[in-house]
Amino acid sequence: MTIAEIVEIESNRNSSEQFAVVHLIKEQGGFYRAHDWSAWLMTNFPVSDVPLQISAKKLKDGYIEAWVGFPVTSLGKYVPDSENITFTPINDNQIDITIPLPDEYKNAEFETLRAAVDDWKSQLPINAGKKQKREDREVAEVAPRFTRMSDVVGRILSFPLAEKSPIEAWQFLRQLQQQAASMF
Image (cartoon, rainbow, N blue to C red; front, top):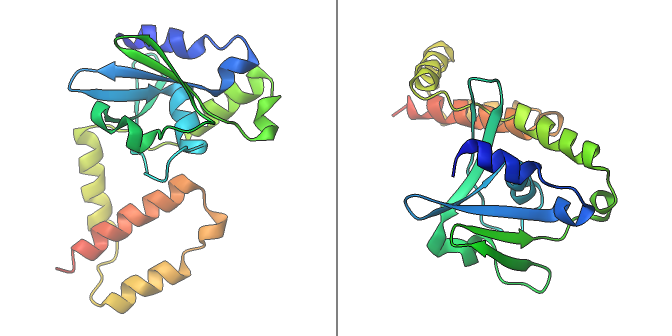
């Protein structure tokens, strides 16, 4: 399935019943992926305690493609069978899952939810392939080197977690991992 087809599927949310539908697309290699709005639903209103890895990349036209994925064989782990979740097979390559939304989202307007999805996507770290790895190396080289574990603990305790977004917290953790790894 092409990105244009996926964008079309994700954009076709013309009724409030569609606002809570996760479109899982089967991809090569035996993975289900939820893109765009569906990825936002799965990460912001999780139906499982199993964390999902969020990926994002910027396309040539400026569109940010965001997705989460997991092996087809792990569907029950990431989306457990529950009376609150409805599974609807669409074809061999797509399953739609309707999940429960909190009350404040059930009656929201399409534009409000679309803005929430776009805001979420704009805060994701963009996967830039080799360029990203080079930037990570530069961060590790510029960042102070830890010589003791008490330095690591001090950085953690001084980080204002309550004032940071999830993305900023993730970036802090990633940088901290790189710096701690340089100790060994």
